[in-house]
Length: 113
Length: 112
Image (cartoon, rainbow over all chains, first blue to last red; front, side, top):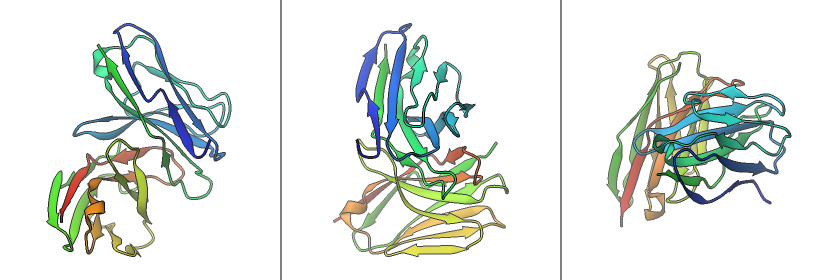
């Protein structure tokens, strides 16, 4: 693994189903983030984590949950997906003790029908 | 919370010309302003950033300027090339607080 990876690359999901998007980084960054990207709205922060064991809410947290059991992994869970959660999801990480430069993963394209 | 506005939403320039993208922010406490380039099907990538203790920063053909009083910052690309075609995002952040607020993006098209 080099940098930050996400899985799956894309997914089509029926409304009401549970889904977990995976994110792993190997840079030992303390901070991790989940964003959703919708046309014309840029990137909006869903949840973030300053360090393993802590999480915080971003701009649009409703319907999503996260956990940070260790430094490397930061999964995002949709407990009961709805069509408005159709989006492209990006995970990012940064070392906020140094310069806070964010590194982004390649994204997951999620469609909820 | 912070509100970041970005203009224009689309920009078309001829190869070799300059391109300027502008952003404004609302929270005077923000002190870190990165710019990202996003190519089709990929995640955003940092291209340049500026902190509030400087007014300008350059990296080859790319420069960013910051006016703290007016709360706006701009990205300048000189001698544009077709490979500069992408979507560019600005963002604002209060350093050491892990919330980044992004502009809505500018789609830059450089015509050969």
